[in-house]
Length: 96
Image 1: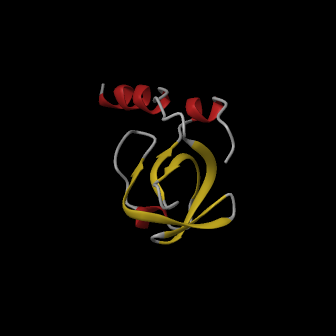
Image 2: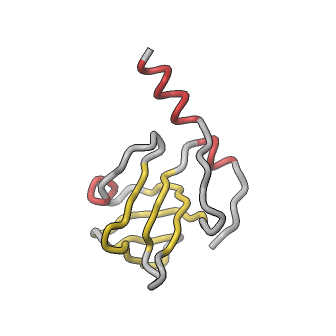
Image 3: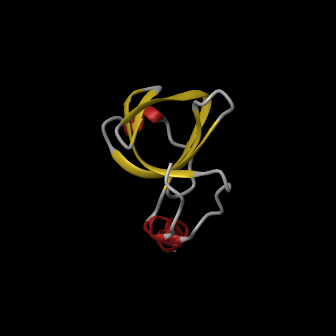
């Protein structure tokens, strides 16, 4: 039963802010990362949400390429990141 509930959550589509952009993210050395190959930096207090809606530490993603939606904070740092599931990836989202 727990497995089927997790499967449902991992395939549901979350609501994202209208300002969210999509990119391929690779964490290189936290808080450093790349978005579509361009070097970026996470803000202090940045949150990364897994495809199962759990908070994820950036260090656990080092070297992994994941498709994400993200928003920046006012100074331009990456502040909130959502790792996308297959259903979310299939949705059209504006490019950065």
